[in-house]
Length: 233
Image (cartoon, rainbow, N blue to C red; front, side):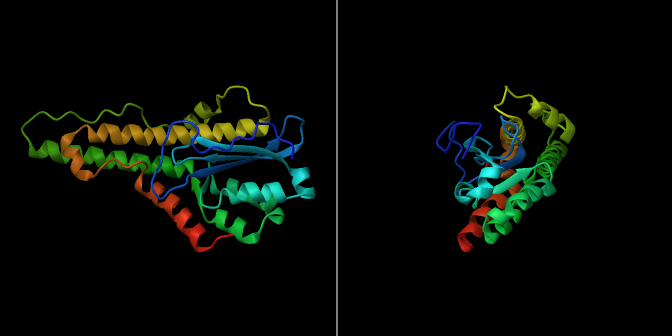
């Protein structure tokens, strides 16, 4: 099956970011390949957004023989799809649903994360940490400096603009997948910066050990693994 990118399928690639009980994410995009034909880009990501597999599959070829498409999607069954909007991921699945087993499609539709929701959760956690600093300030005579976040929370438009600045991609559909992958990585980095900043304050360590991802985000990724174990396709 034709591909705009060399097949990349090695979860050991890049820095190790193993998170217990979690497999990671998947990004889907539909658009033109390098020849102008309709294609599906599939990027498999770690918990913090690092790529561990990438495929660009021609839709017309999948219509003739769906075996490779099904094989790639089997690698996504214990992951959460991630997009700017849940409807975007669902519409892509609907476009190819006739080529995939129905339980596979329904399972993926039940495990969709959106980047705006993840940004909101990180913002909520930062607000809770700021409140904890204020409570500590009220109980001590020492001077307590407010938390200084190394990176301010971007809004959706700002993050989308930042993520769209990519090196030249092999095709428009690959560029779309790369931009979304970049947004996931930036969002995960915002959380890492948040936890590092919080944990430098000794009095904030009572809130718990640093988490690799925000609580709801982490829970959804673990649910995807559990759901796949319970209902294998």
